[in-house]
Image (tube, rainbow, N blue to C red; front, top):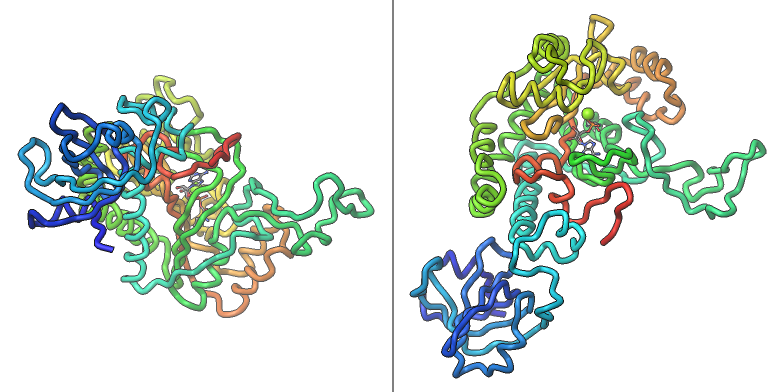
Length: 466
Ligand code: 4AD
Ligand code: MG
């Protein structure tokens, strides 16, 4: 099939060439002699102009080609007289693949709000905004595999159905085939999950990390990249119930190696977007946020600030908004940093990305390596402008006794983690890793304001349409 994409035609040399193209009509305008159709096929942000002379194409046919219609065009590619494009197609043959009722088609030429577009998520990939976001999303996903592959990491596929709660946060979606109306019961009257599909209670995973660690302690360097699920009822612009996470796990890395990798990784990803998605970024920057491209360049060029949690709390306690009572949430050593605090550190104090490390152990997960002070763990969060936390990670507790004590202190069912504990009994080693929230990265790179607009079909509380 000698079918071209719009991208191929716009970026190649050569004229008066016979070409074949298919796509969706964005706009139609014209006069007595000629119709101009702007055609987009998703390959790039730009449209190609189709010129259809009225003496070649009947009015009846032209009336059926409206915004939203899908057409196939055969014609010659010639340099354009008009402004705004270098080449256009003079049509010889047009076939309508799918009509769209001009009145009823929800995507009219006028600008729609992002909220409205969420209600028609089945059609929004046809808009400039979502075309741009989804192409950038693809480029970032591809760059992630490229980055790790070049560094000798192996892509490890960890399970989505799991019997353990990796983060210990307890906000999981149950997976079961039991009849909800009539489940088997234990003598005590609880649901008897030993009769369930897997012979035990299972959930959708919140993280592939624990299995990632098993992989790293054999393959050395691994990463996961898959969907994760959290049943937290947070209706914010930064949370999804189903999101994608990238979790590298590295044998023999300590917390400093971990921070170095996280910084290098994220700079690589942002620089790939700048390199490969310039038209899409230009469009998003012109449409939504003139500072976008500068902000991206800034991340690539500056080295991230690194502070301990204790230092971060000191900075916050000295800050204007704290002293003027402007923070909504309290600041004190031992409480978790809220996104207003994180954004103050990044956007006001340091004015660049910040890695906060050595958090109090009581606000972090059981698997993080305990520091000598007995109070903190070797945790790290990477905080970004506009986003807040984009990466969370740590050096892992590799010492069996310390890990077991912590599991008991935190009332985590030890028997569910026997396999995790065994890796500390047989050939344990220092290791570390982190998790990058993929949608938070896409949010940052595209400059969009809401995480629902950087995943094709978002899952949030009360919303699983499409
Ligand atoms: O900080 P979190 O909970 O860390 C972990 O899950 C570790 N197991 C990672 C590891 O060390 N391998 O989540 C990691 C990142 C966060 O920094 C955030 O970017 C993203 O995942 N994230 C979410 N993104 C969208 N919606 C949510 N509900 C998210 N929860 C976390
Ligand atoms: Mg976190």
